[in-house]
Length: 358
View 1: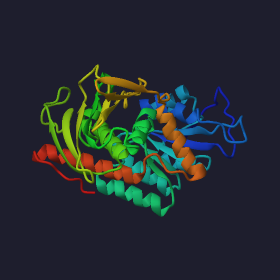
View 2 (view 1 turned 30 degrees about the vertical axis):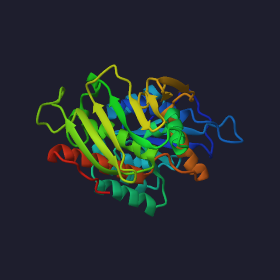
View 3 (view 1 turned 90 degrees about the horizontal axis):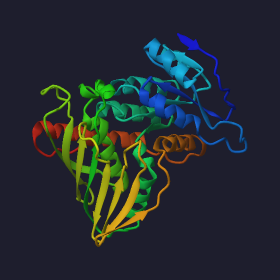
View 4 (view 1 turned 60 degrees about the vertical axis):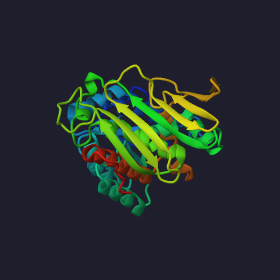
């Protein structure tokens, strides 16, 4: 079934404009991703032609789908996934639904010949994630994971400085990714099979660490405190402290993730022999990130561009389609970061360090 409506603002769409379909009527998709797609730069040589546009939204809930389409001024909403995937003017799919739906939605989109950008986690098991990776490779399609923190200019500059040995030999570091889970978010995030702070926040820590150090996790040891929002014994992690040891360097990093610690900016600190590199607000979508070099009791601010991480994530994905440039985060990244998070989850149960299965 498909519903249609007229747009109040006509988009100048041409053959080179990349059409996107959105799977899942989430608040994030409506508040962030629709605008990130629509505000992409104009097609080269055609300044009045949009670089990308949203052609349709799919949700199994008709009321949510229709409301999403009306509020975001999207021309079509779909209750039947096949109807959306059969549209030839849709080349790319954004999957931003509940994590338990990622696997069937991504596989359906790939089977229909669509390129896919999926929110993390790529799947709930390594087998799911690897199956999606293999399906995309078999069909020569792009499958990216929206690890948008890789697109934050301060994080990219930090990566560049680490490659240039700006603080000498690395000694370790810490990543803090805490926030207060708002009442409207206290739904599936507090239930098993996709919820919990590990799959929602720690997975971004691990992927960012892998990106910055160009290294993999060797083992991870995690501990947690009792939950605040969910029932004790529910199996949902809300406040986790983990120690990660990297494979090549053997350097240890501390990760702290919480659903109930407000007022604390997300922070990355990398310790080196000649200084400390620090990024504040590296994973705060509502705040601009700040990068500083700390040395001899002094802090030197390093200028960086405005963040707009999700806009940049879409930009990199579109560029990969048009010019063949690398994806910001690949399906392989999705598999490996998921494997490390599942090792952390296993560590909570075993009370000992665990190695990722990839």
